[in-house]
Image (cartoon, rainbow, N blue to C red; front, side):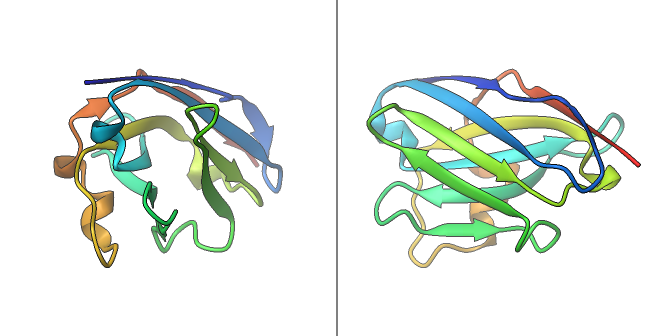
Length: 129
């Protein structure tokens, strides 16, 4: 299993930037792919970005392409999400997730909630206009 702890959520103005972090511990096997998801109350959780451990291949939801960057520091066992040009519609609880699955090529399956079995508790991001 994997333990995940997110941090970095905050309240920012539209157009601003934030960097989320996710500290991971546990078996590396269950971290073959890691991802960020987000959820607003009353709506389903949606994938934002994923990264495959082997090769560092990334995949992004269309809504964040060009604005968000997912990365990982394997020496620190930390996953990051750099968010820029934030919009009010980016407001959500952001969750870190990990899975033993690895896709080649990486597809939208890497942003499916059903693909992940290890989740953090979430960190809140609020973007005001």
